[in-house]
Image (cartoon, rainbow, N blue to C red; front, side, top):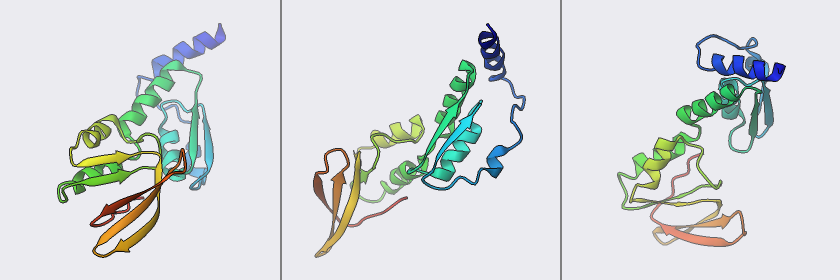
Length: 168
C-alpha cells in the first residue's frame, strides 16, 4: 500500500518543475571514465545522464527509482538529450564532402537520440558497421586500409578508403 502511494505521488511529481534533488551529490561523485555508477533515486535522470557523460563509452550508469513516472521521465529525458550524438552528427555533416562514408561503431546500436539515428541511417552516403572496432591502419599507395574486428565473432575485415576520420 505504501509503495503504491509513493509511486503515485512521485509519478505525479515527474511532470512538475519542482526540484527533488538531494543536494547535488553528483558534484562530489568524482566519477571517472570507465567506471560503473549507480544513481539511487535517480528521479528524472539528470544526474544519471551527467554521470554517463563522465564515464563515457567504457563505463556504465544504472539509474534506479521506485516511481514508474520518474523512470518514464528519465527515459524521455535521455532520448531527448541523447548521448553519443556527436559522432553521428559529425558523420552526417562530413558526408557532404566525400561520395561515401563507412562508419564503424563498437556497440550494437547508437546511443544518439532517435532523430539523429534516423538521419544517419537514412543517409544514402553513409554505411554503418556495428559491433566492430578498428585494429590497424595500413597505407597502401595512395589508399588507407583499415582493418576492423567484429567484436562478436572476432573476424577481421579490411576496408580500403581515401582517408580515415577518427571520432572518439
